Amino acid sequence: MFDLDLTLLEGDTDQLWCMYLIERGLLGKEMEPHNARWQQQYKSGRVNATQFCRFYAGLLKGHEEAACQHIRDEFFEEVLWPRIPPMAKYLVELHRDGGDSLLLTTASSHFLVMPVARKLGFDAWIATTWQLDENRVFTGELEGRPNMGIDKVRYLRQWLKQRNVCSLAEMSAILAGSTFYSDSIKDLPLLKSVGCPVVMNPDARLLKESLIRGWPVRRLW
Image 1 (cartoon, rainbow, N blue to C red):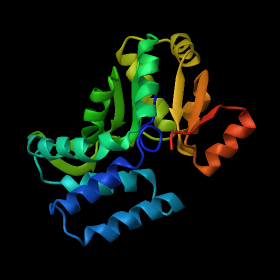
Image 2: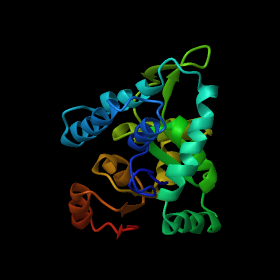
Image 3: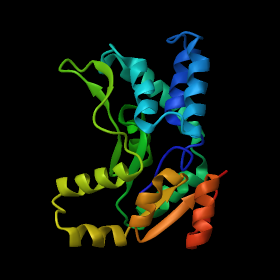
Image 4: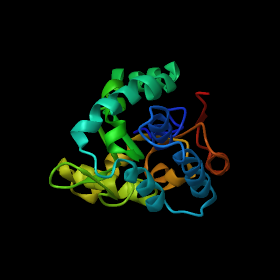
């Protein structure tokens, strides 16, 4: 299992998406300080994960999903893919060649990360979902809670149940045999749940935690 932003990807997907829309003239320049402010407020704890993710979900409010896919794909090719360093791609490939099942689990938008997961060859991905109405138009809201913190563990368990892994013993065995890579202290619940936690490009709090727990630390940049 891999987190995406600042783990495999050098940057934050949602923030980069907002900047890309501004650069393409699809959002006004006045959104630039809002983008920076939301990032700062989230990092400082002044807004929670739901508020943070809802801000980015609101950028496409009223737009049809199908009409946004072309610009999303261009964003992937021009911005996201160049920000995934060769060593990150090699690490994913190493696990795939070793016969591991690959799961991308990220707080970023499912709509935005889908091309990343496919290009890197992930078997599946779990992400925060931007809500669509019955006409496949973005509502500006979230479908459920962000895939973050303890909810990242909850969504993983739901995903396993959908694949007929229903008993607690089976889930525990799978997690015990799993590796999870992440950069963020917010992923501590899932890092503590797996048999092989690996800290990647850690923030200060996760680095301290990894030193206490003896977890391996890797850096890709």
